Length: 379
Image (cartoon, rainbow, N blue to C red):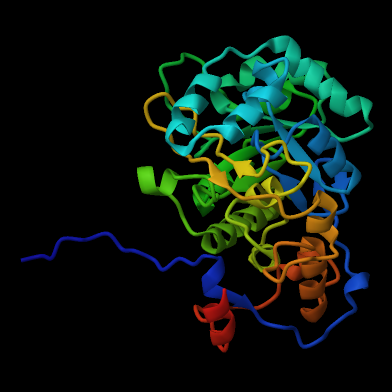
């Protein structure tokens, strides 16, 4: 009697299960180049601030741009629903834990005001900053023309899971090749975690891919839906798709690992695994300039029947500049992220991000605990 085939499970890895092997040649960290490109736009640091209301508002986007990175303004959040979003953000931060989910559902049930879309974008542009905006696939066709008219520089189309082929009741849903041709700015799509899904999205003509499903500190998608792939494996698989797409098209499409970052070591590991940049939420929600008042919540939270996020208290630990460039006031690696990346690149002998992709990595589940008994007992 033939044995029926069963599912074959492959081993996957997250940040805490791997380590970077130092290179045979080392270089001074100040000689490293951390430039990152989306389309024709170049950023001096490979870090993006997430399209989340507790992270990015107009002022944060301006500051992030001035510091060399990129912040994404969420076009379906409080910034475009309320004339005075600061009052709403304070109300969310001050709500008791047992009432915050129902409050978030109420807050996000208010209609989006299209005039505020243009107002927020223009406020960022008037400050001389690069403006990136994000929307869900279902609403992209509505918001893309508004964003372009207001002179946004990059459009992010982002949901928990995004694919190049989607079936819905809509006769004409969002078709990425048509979107890319219809807007004169780069389109970044996400999120995905597999080689095949990433490759198909790249073939639609988008200018960047977001990698990661459910790793964020405020996201409960993995618990509620059971969906996701640990970030190191997801990044490695999507980086392979990027390289394959470059071979077949001659076009290099950067991948951005999105979510799950807690410290500089995670950023370094993501880059070594093949990421061109990282999108960060909770770490930036801890900055003095973040609009969340020391709290953070996910963009999937407002669903009226199935909230897939939670408000978490992250506290305020430092300024945005301090978290990006130091000087650090903590020992947990959550500040001076760029200093950590440059140091890791230096010890791996990598002059730039592409060279860091070639760094050797090992499976190392004890990398954060080996020899650290005193630290573990005193933490």
